[in-house]
Length: 155
Image 1 (cartoon, rainbow, N blue to C red):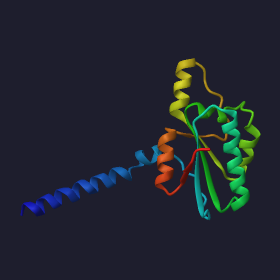
Image 2 (cartoon, helix red, strand yellow; image 1 turned 180 degrees about the vertical axis):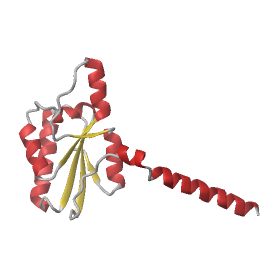
Image 3 (cartoon, rainbow, N blue to C red; image 1 turned 30 degrees about the vertical axis):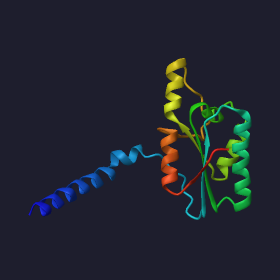
Image 4 (cartoon, rainbow, N blue to C red; image 1 turned 90 degrees about the horizontal axis):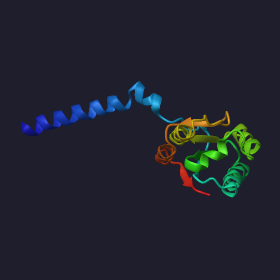
């Protein structure tokens, strides 16, 4: 009898957890993940350094993968956080390359935790590339991507 009651309680808790996970409030906070239904390969590129050479390398990797697989067969999502968000500033030297990659289906994410910290510390808004996809937390986005089968590479 006690086992049955415990099982009913566990099932009730599990159903409550499932209801919470499917709630609209939680879905609104979920980070957008690139949608490429025909992609056979999924890659997340992490950029967390303010280094023009690493920015160029990240861009090069994305271009090379699009060339190798074709833009429909690979999903590439670049996740920037910390000092790496500089790639997605409106005035970045690589702006044209980022915009070109976006037009080919690459998604560029910017960590809003980082942006909010910069704005709080400087008292000035950060001028971002309008193609930057705002995500709550860059590292959480990487975790979500890897949980969905993306391979993480840090060029």
